[in-house]
Image (cartoon, rainbow, N blue to C red; front, side, top):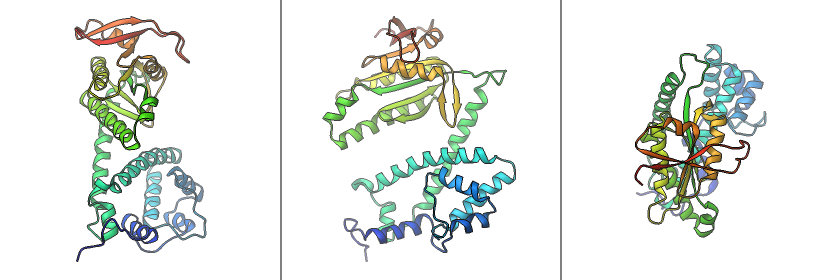
Length: 328
């Protein structure tokens, strides 16, 4: 006998109860003091970690925590005990990971509740289908390990002989031109599709060049590439995405120089210059700073034309160059 029609899901309370059992596991519930005392972690740190995860504090007399919460806190205590990480960095890393995973989780829910979501987590909750959580856990672990090794590999080659000297990096931003006007004219579904497609195409282009998408900021993609020539190729390829029929124009800014990496994000004057050049670039163009232009000198594949810009906010006068593929 088949389960209930997905168009007629159970009530909210029943659905949430099934979701809790499936995702967090069923069994005894614990109060916060019971969890941190059993884990051997100080109350103050336990509270800090919970807030760093992005959740409000649970009242001390509310037995709403699960065995998974206790196990995670025990593991955190073990990392502290063996000296793998100190408390301050543990809290920071918890916050960074939680922010990223919150985005992933929201995206999963958005996908599984959409009409085209197919049989997935929502189906399992409604009609008792196969539990997808072990597969999701395995895939998330695999993706993390792959990205962790890639980050270690980048770090191993990102410093010169003097490890205190930051190696140069190309940082770029790609933005949909006239996004406010596009927003006003598009439906919510069209706008979501447009942003998702732009982000996907941008991520593929950057990855193909051996670079990294640092983050997505609305309709803007921030990325980095270690090789100046490849950075220029990415910039021109991103601009070209806006030349397809029906696609909105794209403008790009790229700068080359030392960059500070912190918790996966990039900081410094090179980043600020790239961002301001993106703002200054006209639709369908790419602007680069003098650092990248100098690194491309003599490269027969590109043409660089000096452009005069008004002083850029927070940076003053910046030498900028319009980038084009030679012969275009």
